[in-house]
Length: 166
Image (cartoon, rainbow, N blue to C red; front, side, top):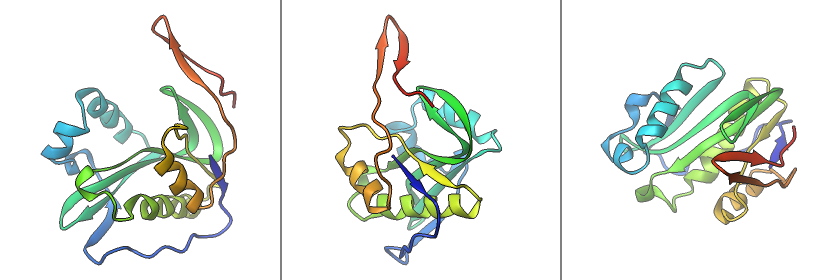
């Protein structure tokens, strides 16, 4: 899914107790580390934090990390491979901790991320969503994204394949 970034998306912060900011690996507390941040994801994130073309944004509620999302600037990631694409930013690994679901955080943070992409001079925002993830598709549509391309990924004999050609 993608959206041409022509103007900012109007968004209201759902609650006064929310704090949105760039985060570091240290912001993932013990709950996240036991439920979401597996060892392999931890290592992956640690490598991402070293990049100068990616940021991790978090939404905190009452001082606790409730939502995390990554933005990759000038590229798209699929099956672990990053394809450089000038002026395209990519939403990566958005996740709302289960305790905080149902509060509109995904809609808010998605719009926030698209606005950040626009501020950084990106011309298009993109995301890959599984066809079975109806809530995520609904969020993307609310933020003005549309389905640009349908593709398939699969694994055969421990090797990943994709019909996505960029």
